[in-house]
Length: 308
Image 1 (tube, rainbow, N blue to C red):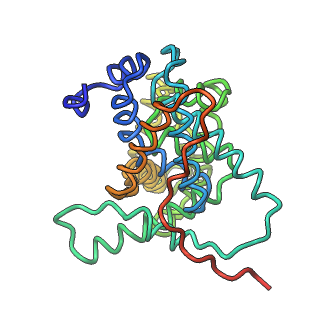
Image 2 (image 1 turned 30 degrees about the vertical axis):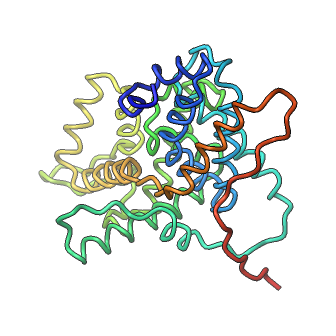
């Protein structure tokens, strides 16, 4: 199915991969290569580690494709593999000497901001600024919150799929997700013109005493997951309609989630994609017990000097 692979669904490619079709394995992995790389970059915060995670994930997936039984989505299966390699990288780096790594440089070099074709230079600059601030805010999250935010709001998995990937309950996923969203929103608030918090008194609008605002940000995050019943949702909408500060806060959370969903996947070179395809085919064609396929990586940039 080499000629039609680009039109095939994940499930069709996986079915062919399980039967030993190396081209289908290579096509499936090539399809997810930019997304796995994006996840690795955001989880590891280091482009070299992310490249290692990408390669290790694709090779591990190629080796185990025959064992896939469809208990989860193909995307969940691949992200679970990638996550395991990210955790290994994090453990190895925990006690490594500190190195000067700039997340701003990483964001500029590896993950270009998604700009609209009709954006003015000023708008494009603002988009880039927001994407870099978003990257820094995500990097500042603790790993357990960072991974659920990335999987749910950047990679687009459902809460149930994220639960499968990280191995915790859906309720735990949502709890971590809500905390992560609010932390990232708080970091972006100055850029979004929304340095407003919930739980503060709203200014009176009709001469009545000021009312105590509900926790609108937490409620909105829960609403985005379908966890707010219609009656409470109606109360929330009514309050936001009459409270300017809560309306600004809610708008900033919506913008934050929208920015996450618009995070572009890093571009991967044709040479790297072709090299990985060849490596996957060689891996699958090799007889049992053969020497492992040589690593496929782009040239590494020189390390910056360590802190003295």
